[in-house]
Image 1: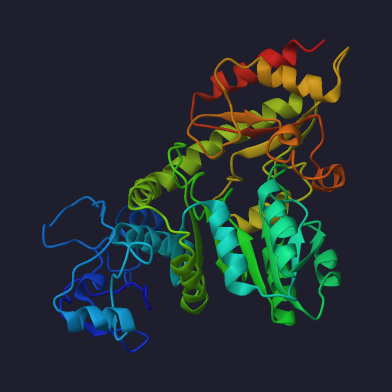
Image 2: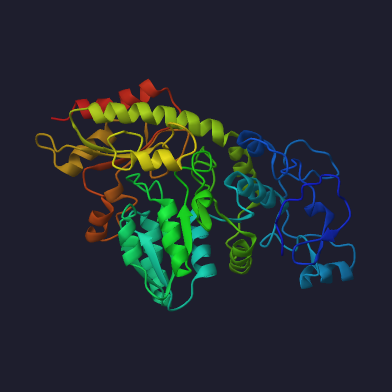
Length: 434
């Protein structure tokens, strides 16, 4: 595959030149939605990226095929030598996966997307595509524990060094730049405290060095925030979370320019970090309702955060939707959907009576009857976990402290249940602390 851009003319049937100059198979040309028109996000979420086959199907099909058939030996050779762009092998490209990639790219405002087998697969692809021995990363301290482990334990083994800074400290980002800095990386909102990084400022710091700025947009999704609009070069997703929205399958993606995505695609093609067609189809269906779900998630989260902030046994609530949050105004600026700040929050429970910080947090978690105790997030079902002993247990005590992961911290992913039931379930444990 040498091109993955959207054709805006649904009537095309004959092979045409791609950007690379190769011939493009007709089945790569058509798109059910003409993106040259000024369609809204919800329309794009429902219709963009689909190519209808000769069967005339209305719903996107699942192409469960490992390989593809050619018109002749010469046609096969043309596909393999790159003079004709099209499907070669499903480790490389697959029509269902391509539909997901096109739709996500359209939603993020990127030229192209590359799908991967998981969110961590997307981050590994990023590292392999854009870094080499001797390069330096500046990364936020406030990252998912597995991302820290990947950077420290594996990229370090291959000669890539990392400096960690507070995501919200613009001067720290600038001070950490070294002559060999190749990439700046952050999550915003971050995991698990929901801190907000200044995307415009960090992008300017990265580009002054000639480095790439990569943003994990998993918690906000394009329904709330579009990092490319603020200067990010690449957006990373764990599609497992909100893009699926129902905790069914694993997947990830990168979004950015065609040039950068081609580099990522070569890694996925060669390394086999590929998304399955079935999972891609699940994500396509998830994108159709992403806008609607994120509004409902955010409405519930705002009410839950207000309840937690007012509870006497809660020490602190980490949620940028609260006006008391130090980065509330920056979140308002960067989130294009009004009064939507995501639905992930952390809250610290007070050590009450005989309870230590950890036992108090565990008591609240164990007292729930409806909320799911699981490390997944972005689900229609509300989920809760204790980061210090689950998602971040592998990182050092020092790294936990720098990331703000304390023994008293609970991470909550607010779902789509009746918000009064969510609050009642959390209150059960908080009220009974003694």
